[in-house]
Length: 389
Image (cartoon, rainbow, N blue to C red; front, side):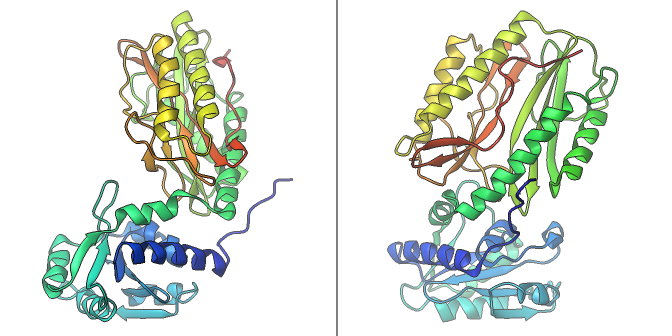
């Protein structure tokens, strides 16, 4: 019987996250941090809603240097926020284009930003500010004496290492999705379209227990595929095709992100060799995932195998990344990232190579770093390219 992790987190989890970010705020001389995105707000409050799909209303949470976060949100979300551990909640009736929470937000920032007179906002790589640009400009004009610093570095540092409860959720969705991929071999058929095969897979994953598979892409082609971010399309699978499915499936807001490759009827020697190369590259990257090593060590280990295996290029730009509340998180496995690996870090290992002009082979697994070495979260793929007959 599958042990299903408990949904949500105990209050102590949020208190720990708050303690970590407030320690970094003190070191960075920040009085308050403004959160506006779904992921950041959920991470620090536990507020979970699909309503962020609507761009109509902004949502704000302020993290002060001391004390609990303050939510400044549309009235429509008040009851949901009161179900979290947050009890400091200010509301306004939204949408209100003339003042969509900016006055409330301004007053609260002025209240909190009295020591260093500094507010942190996510401004760096892989960050966004989820509010109208005009409202953000108005906010800045309202607080001319308060310095605005980029808080992206410290926010991502806190999320970089996952708690045991977070890892349990990621492991769970990885295990479900792994079973789905294993069983998929018996479902795939020549003559069905990429789209049809992906729909079968998603339906099966939902039946197995994932909450959703919001990211599900595929590609196929004779002897190989040329893209790993497009599709699925209505192209019919034919004998001699190589087919890849890549999924980001979710359990309780936490993602898995890995793929599997399949050949139909037969596979060329070049395709088999490319598959063996990326499999070996993943193994090599896995061995490098030790506490104290860096993401660049992992990249270099995998890239050496790819180059020795005959790679003639790559379109991906990195060989894996962080994983958690988002399908892709910081850091990136690149030659110059150099982020130090720590216990609790969850990564994807994603070696990819172009082995013929216009033909790629990409493989991805999910792992967690522990004091005793790396642990597979996804069930390891077949060592040889599966052939569907």
